[in-house]
Image 1 (cartoon, rainbow, N blue to C red):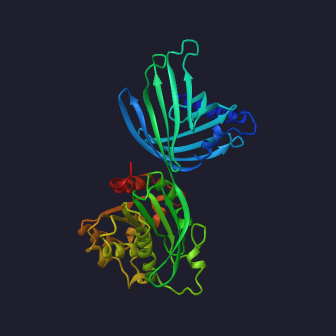
Image 2: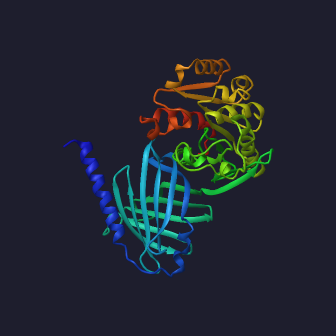
Image 3: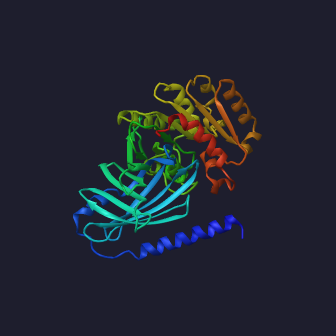
Length: 409
């Protein structure tokens, strides 16, 4: 049997045992206030991690965690997805109260396929669990400490001792920043109410404004893209423009749904995108602001980047429209006026059109970055494997490399 097959079987067995162990947790009603602070850790979090790779050496990683209540409020369950040593990494953790002060922690991680079962105590809004590598000698010990800093921030760190707990070395330090999601509205300069979704971790961090293609909406087009951007530490504002719908990717366009009359063309949606930028400024999002457009909204984003370069740090344009539908707001004339970083992306299949060839040539002439996705479809969907029906990791690599100067970590 091949080593990889053995590893997969082993990890599968560990996962089955993990879920069995969870199901065996004691079922009782938690009334002790010592556990109340655990409930405040529920939600979606951006996590920055310092992982020890060898004594004295640490690697910075990051990802997102979803924490939910478990065992009648006496515990929590964490599902984390992120990176470790530049590879995808996942872990599952369950912390459960045993009685008035004792707590049990069960942890499983994908890197080592390891299963840990620890017991500790909770007192005074802090949790410490100890794991004795040798229960008789207790020379080698691990210690895990969870502490709250605020309602939107907490830490969960682990330490190792090899001298009976006299000295401790940090092995992992995880800092959790809460991601707050809310539906928002704002009014444009021409009095249209635009609906959107705001995902906020920290207003001082970078924010990406996501705008969709024609016949679409924010939740439908970006349902798999938003989690990846949150996983990188960005705030995200995804809006429904006045030109859109439910023709692609499901969902519905809330802005369109609330219009009494809708005979707008693509160019007339420009105030929606500018309104999103103004919403961030008005609400004191002080970090970098990055435009992200798809099809016709990419064309409008290029125009906005030309007009408001002092307020925008960078722009990504996925398949910017070039046809008659945008003849009154054609993006090409604006390319020469953009001084901020711009990444223009198209799938290979669109490069059979002369208009696409001319646009990329013009973008390069003005020192903008371009990319042709060999496996790709129109617009931002070139990042969604289910829509491309091929691997999209190389396209994501290009996008994340472009965004790297604006990362929080």
